[in-house]
Image 1 (tube, rainbow, N blue to C red):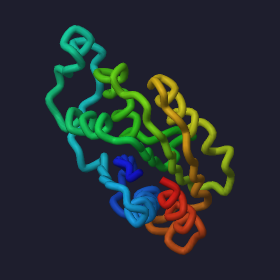
Image 2: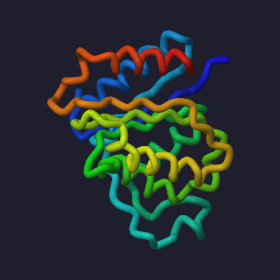
Image 3: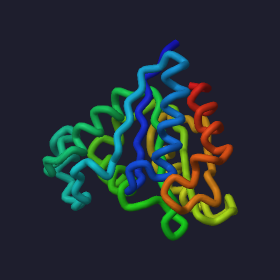
Image 4: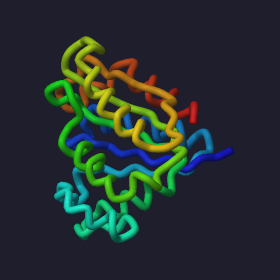
Length: 179
């Protein structure tokens, strides 16, 4: 069965290492017959959640009128969600954190999603990504019926495009083919 795949590229750099891995994942998932859409989060206008809980009393409608409502519509549409982020101080970057926090308005209706996580870091050690992975997993744990399907650690990539000549590109492509 073909699936609807949403890739949330949290990289602040267009063509950054985690963003390039998203493109390879997309190539694999598309070749496998899936409907794939990628959102480069940094190019979206997303304000931080102000914890007003307007959404609680208004059927998930957020008081903030920005691009997050469109992103949440696409999250609800998708069968598969790919979340990608470079490691910043052992955690996800601000762009991805904003998406997670703003999901507050609809988290109770986002369910039965398959998740893939892509992370990149300058260090050559998967343990530097432990907190990053836990940020992703913590979000998914809050959603009914979520399933983790794959994780990609892109280690030792710092400079823009450094991931291009690594095995991680092929791994991202193969991960996409699994969808």
